[in-house]
Structure formats: C-alpha cells, structure tokens
Image 1 (tube, rainbow, N blue to C red):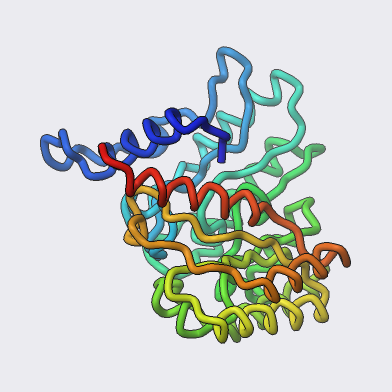
Image 2 (image 1 turned 60 degrees about the vertical axis):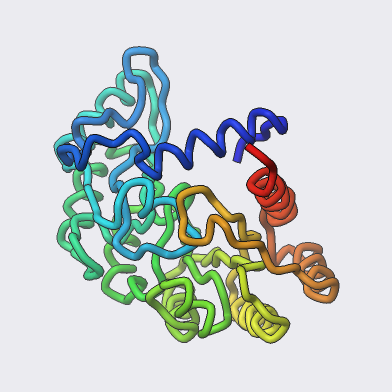
Length: 296
C-alpha cells in the first residue's frame, strides 16, 4: 500500500468508501467485458502484469476485490491476452506476470476449476513467447489451496517458469476461516503444500494475523500450522489485518498481536522461513481506525 500523509490517507479513505457505497449511482450499469479495459498503457510503453480476472466469487470478508468489482468473475479472453503480449514483445519485454485474485479460477464462473481454460491460456502465452518466461501462480496472483491438485500442478509445471507458488492459507483457525468465508479448511492448506512440494514448487503461504475476534488460541493454531508448513518445506508470507474500505470488516478493529506471537514471528523471520510487511500493515490499520473515528 502506498504511503500517505494524514490528509492524503483521509481523502483516499473517503473517496474509496464513497465510490464503493455507490452514493452517486444511477443504478447498475452494463457489465462490460474485461477486454474493454487495457491492462496497461501500451502507447506510452508502460508495462505491468496483465489483469486476467476481475472480481471474485469467494467474497472473503477482509478482501476488497469482491466488493469493489463484485462477487463474480470477469476474465480477459485468450485472444486479448495475446494482443497484450505482442505489444510487450515489440518493446523487448520477455517475461509475463498475471494479475488475478485466484489464478486457477481462470475461465470459471463459479468455484470450480476449468483446467482446460487455464491450459488454453498458458499454451497461448507460451506460443507467443516461446523463449520468454511465464510467471503464473506467483506475485501478483495466488492459488487457492483447494485448487492445488496433482492435475492442476501438471498443467503449471508444463508451462510456467516460476519455482514458487503463492497459496492463500490465511489462518490455522478453522473458526476464523469459516467466519471470514474463506471456503476452505486447514487440511486443504496442508495438502496443497505437500502436493506443490512433490511437484517441485516451493510454496509461499499467505497468513493473516490480527483478524477481528482473533483469540490467543486462534493465533496459537496459526503459528502451529505455520511451523508445520515450514517443516514440510514452505515459507510463510505474513500479513496483518487492515479494515479496508468497502469490505464487511471495514469498521472492525484489528485484534492485538500479542508479544509472544510477535517474538515467534521474528524468530521465523530470522531463520528465513517467514517474510512480509505485517508491521507496516499494523501501522496502516491503526491509521484507518483513527481516521474512521475522527469527526468528518
């Protein structure tokens, strides 16, 4: 998240909340195809990851994506992705990343996985960039744990160049996974890590601490899961909860992360088994809570 001064953060907060409330809406507009929105400014030679999916059917309560872009998927067509790659190739770009909330949901309209669509996409990218590098399932995208299967990993291994897979685990507490509408359980995370490692990937597993209502027991379960995943060969990507505008938890206060948990996270960071911007996230969360409570 960009660094704002107090005035800038307050202004951004109001602008985002106003837009997401639809305070000046004239009703639902036409849902235009994602192809209508260029992924980058090609005429200016400004390149970035190609957004291949907008919106998300899972509607996790801490995430802005489904509430900003609706809890539905819109996918960029393979032909449009090809067009973007050709623009990049003309400027000498030889690597490709993709922006998506859940990479193995490409081509699907619901919670199912359409591996044929995923393979069609990756095969087209490889055809356009036979000597280039394809990064898929890593930043700025991730894999949902229940989507990581032997079949999906075979498709990824066939086309992608990244050795790391980002897997959204979020918590070791089954209760918090249910209450935040994650749609998967702890066992799904463990299975995904085992399968990814067996296929030659190193999993980077996202964890989110400080969720509203999180207890000492919940944090202990998350740390226990984190240690277990590290023993299997994963690395932990740590985050702290932020009450993001427009989400169901926008007005919720983060739970405090106790000192023992902080010390354990620091030990894991020192060992190279954890990384992330969770300290900065805590600062931003405190700013959001303060600004929301201030008179307007």
